[in-house]
Amino acid sequence: MRVGTVQKRVIVRHVVILGLCVAFGWFLKAKLTPPAPSMGMMGAGEPLVLTQVLETRNIAPKKTYIGHVEPIKSVNLMPQITGYVEKVLFEEGSLVQEGDILFVIEQERYIANVSLREAELASAKANLVRAERDYKRQSSLSKQNYASKATLDNAESAYLQAKAAVSQAQANLDLAKINLGYTEIKAPISGRIGKALITEGNYVAATSQSLARIVQTNPIRVAFSVTDKDMLNMRQFYGAKGSPLKTELVLSNGTVLVNNLRSRFTDNEVNSDTATIAVYAEYNNDKDLLIPGNYVDIRIGNKDDQLALLVSQGAIAQDQHGNYVMIVTEDGVAEQRRVELGEIIEDKQVVLSGLSADDKVIIQGLQKVRDGQKVKAQLVSPSAEVK
Image (cartoon, rainbow, N blue to C red):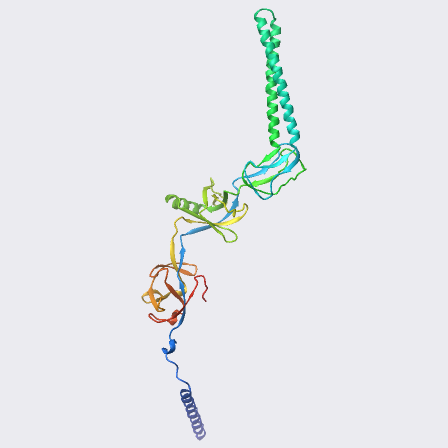
């Protein structure tokens, strides 16, 4: 019993000594630590905040589809006659106009053939004149009973044969001229021509091989498919409003083409395998940015823009009264603004009321300020990412 009492006394003594040491240490810290400067000294009470001007964006609903660029017209140039290619008169990859001469095929032989057919026609006409005179003479003699009926019949037959020979010679001449025209291969459409598949000196046969290909590039067509549901929605919505349709084409490099739609039409039936229907949209391509065979994103929406103010979600605070943000006035004073918010778009939210486009909203440092407090504000761009 005495041993336990002694141990208790030793423990109590140690606890008392430890407590005195701790108290003495806090006393020394209080004496040696300098007093903290007041918040009002030398402007130390002005916290640094980051601000942003509200973003104005068109939030009209849009649907995006993948489109395939294709020419409205395309032509493979084919020879209609046989012969050697004498001339290639275009620059590969260039724009050609309808009617431009692109190839010349061995013209001399076909020019000579035209001359031959002209001579044959002249001979046939001369024979016709002689046969006609003979027939008229025999007809007159027959009326006077000086010529037999057989002689008159022979004269009439010769006259009719001579007329037929003239028609045949004229047809042969026309055909020769047509073939001569085929020696100059002209562009049937305006567009961009590709590589010359046959060069000078090569022999070509009629309709046996392609000489080159032309594709129309302006205007040009973009084909894409939409679901049957989307097509019904577009017909009901845009059709009822006089087709206020707006399309945007997003190229592979990010370039956006707006308001160059000329016309559009849909296919005549829905693909039962995919439940989609093909849509063909015709566009101006004055800048030659739409290349046949390319793929683009096509965005379809309302023709009328729906502009809205967007505020960063990091700038929005909430209390028992609702949502609010803090702005910085021209005098550098933080001011609370109650806001009514709409839908969320990416990392921002639509502001329905409470702010104007010129307001500078605090997006970082919101927890350090209060309404009416002087602040140091640094403006950042709307695209800057705040972590």
